[in-house]
Amino acid sequence: MSSNRFLISGGGTGGHIFPALSIAGEIRRRMPEAEILFVGAEGRMEMERVPAAGYQIKGLPVMGFDRHNLLRNVKVLACLWKSMRMARQILREFNPDVAIGVGGYASGPMLKAAQKAGIPTLLQEQNSYAGVTNKMLAAKARCICVAYEGMERFFPKESIVLTGNPVRQNLLACTATPHEARQAMGIDPDKRTILVIGGSLGARTINQALIAGLERLGHEPGLQVIWQSGKYYDEQCREALAASGVQNVVQMAFISNMDMAYRAADLVVSRAGASSISELQLLGKPCILVPSPNVAEDHQTKNALALADRQAAIMVPDKEAAGRMVDTMVRTVTDQGVLATLAANVAKMALRDAAQHIVDEVMTLAMEDR
Image (cartoon, rainbow, N blue to C red):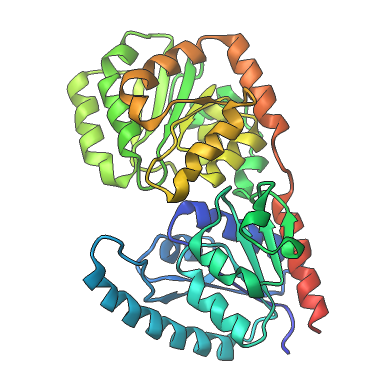
């Protein structure tokens, strides 16, 4: 078998892509000569983000099942069959030592094909409630890296390793002070700063709550807001901000320098996805979490409650965001005692060096099969 070849599959959202890139970065740090191939879903975010990070990627025509329009699943099944065939071809050509799945439907055909071919597979599950693809692949996976206790209800206990979630390495490497970071973001370096993020695609409830609260924010001259609206809501949010005349809110579709944005913020408002929570824990950031209700088994609410119950975050339920979110933001960011308590408690929950621990397991699998 060719040495030092690693295949990483998954994607669909930033929550899957960023951990995958962190794992790849750690493999490359240890083994600069290693060959790393990503496999994602055609037309999804990974097809842009992975090449931008310097890695090769192949796309499969795989699609998620449509629970609302069952007829559409005829096409889904055809794409799945084609993806399985392509996955087998990729394995024959690349011949990896280990195949790593980070979740999302893109990883299903690739990891299934690897398991059938006898290639060791490692799964990385970011959430407290396991995804459908990882549950399907779990029985034949050699190792399953998780970020939460109690994952035995989804996976074989003997395969589970508690590692935490890898995060974007540049976030932890940033050494800028809040003052320097605000200057880099082009905002007032001396004002208290709130960062509002709804994910790369956007979060409708968070955006609507902010639009509803623009006038209130405009009357808080000592505060400023960095608002990542996501690309789907960019035009609507930009127009609402322009119409309001509010000067202390900066809106953008996507923040490319998230390391600076996090450093600039005294308080972060976010959905409660696993990757976001891991970043907030590792950076020790006071946060308000607005869990998305549109996820399997309402796992974001479970993620958020795990923090709120330890006074490590403030949770605002999605259905209450329009009435409560902006008031809670203003009240929290101006209370130094609350900010300090949240920061200390969220930092205590961090599982550090997740990418290193996961790659330790990857290397063990690679050596076992030599």
